[in-house]
Image 1: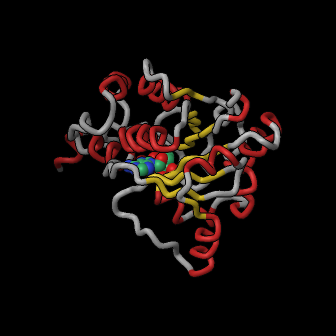
Image 2 (image 1 turned 90 degrees about the horizontal axis):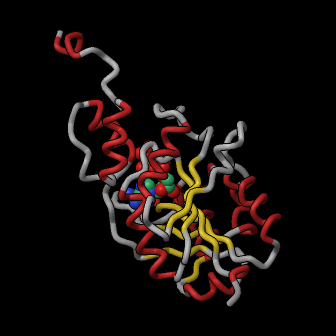
Length: 226
Ligand code: ATP
């Protein structure tokens, strides 16, 4: 199989900060599906959520530190370089135009994101551009919110990893990845409460957060004690 038609998988996120819940399921998925690269794509202006506390440059640096020395992962800056909101569909349109109609493309998401996929910009077009590779995430139900969404998911469902390599787009693959009970919110909350979070993310990222003083309690300590 030539390079041009290997399945290209992207993992987009705010990465505020990147943690083992992003990295470990993606590594397990790569082994199952035969991914040679997972492209991490930090987004610049996440449309669905409050603006991040860390600057874009800090979030990128944390991704860089997390993947240093791991040849599975690479960093893609295209969403960071845009000043408009990061809509996955627009990124996929751009990639599809670059790679041509036959290149298998996949977007990796967690089960929580699958459950809210209908809130994504032009979500119904997503599967014309890519496959969705879904990693399990503890605490999120396996059924979709409505019968229509469940039907949409089931119509596109495949258990055949080979099909992901053989077709350019259109499948939903539910991967049996390890359950990693970590969220970026929990890491930020622990930091704000002055608790350690170093078991949840790579040491280099944890050290960077300490050095940069990220996610510190916004109120001075003496005010909190009053
Ligand atoms: P936050 O807590 O700030 O909302 P997050 O931990 O969910 O952040 P994101 O950067 O928003 O992280 O997530 C990027 C992608 O990674 C999403 O598709 C999300 O579903 C997935 N993901 C994040 N954490 C996990 C996890 N623990 N297990 C599986 N998938 C995850």
